[in-house]
Figure 1 (cartoon, rainbow, N blue to C red):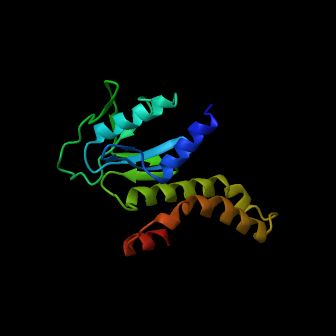
Figure 2 (cartoon, rainbow, N blue to C red):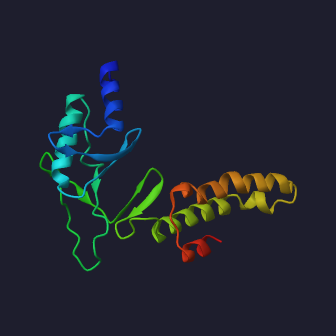
Figure 3 (tube, rainbow, N blue to C red):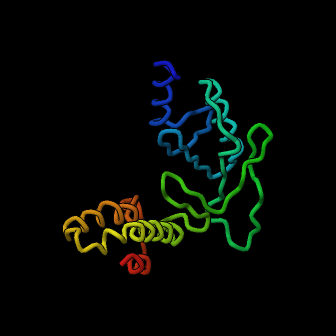
Length: 173
């Protein structure tokens, strides 16, 4: 567990990115999930984060940590690893789930990968509730509550951050 000073220091670093000389790390974090954003030198940033975590007796799991290059052209070969953590290469992925959203290297904004994932989740939940929706003993009002709370919530999770084009909006209809 972290003591009070360590928690204050970590909280302070969330509002002002950690600095070492002229280096700044931009990140987005929630609980134990962290996304680091680099325009250059991903290895330097990862090393800096690793050193900072070690000061607070925290570790980064090389097995769970993934790396991704956003906006990489499709004709450029995708390497197996571009960074390592204490000489252990990190897996380079083309897409992954972060805080419930699917991120694809070719779609830096809300892409078809995320929409398809959300639609699949909504369809799967709808199918699992088919017995309720087809049961004539269940009131319509109850069915609507189930639809809104269990199906639409999965479909629209994180939608406040989506930037959609017209084709994607039509796909959701």
